[in-house]
Length: 72
Image 1 (cartoon, rainbow, N blue to C red):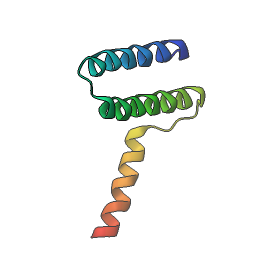
Image 2: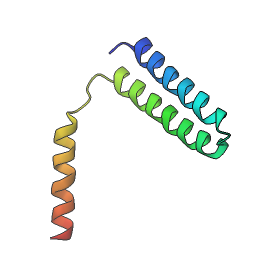
Image 3: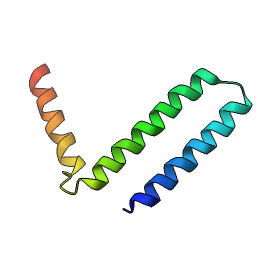
Image 4: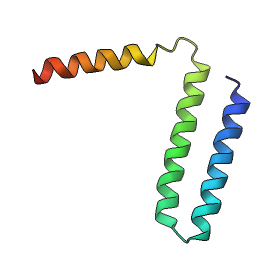
């Protein structure tokens, strides 16, 4: 995916969140949701720049296998 497109989508998401929460005077919620949005932006940019990203389904299956072996 294009890096510019990712940045635009996340900035629109942040602007919408800022507009909604600023009107309702929810500063604490605005901080945490902004932190989550910018974390998602950073992770998606890192994953987009790094081209050898593994399949998430395989990672989830490996995680479940390890967790099941710990608790069974």
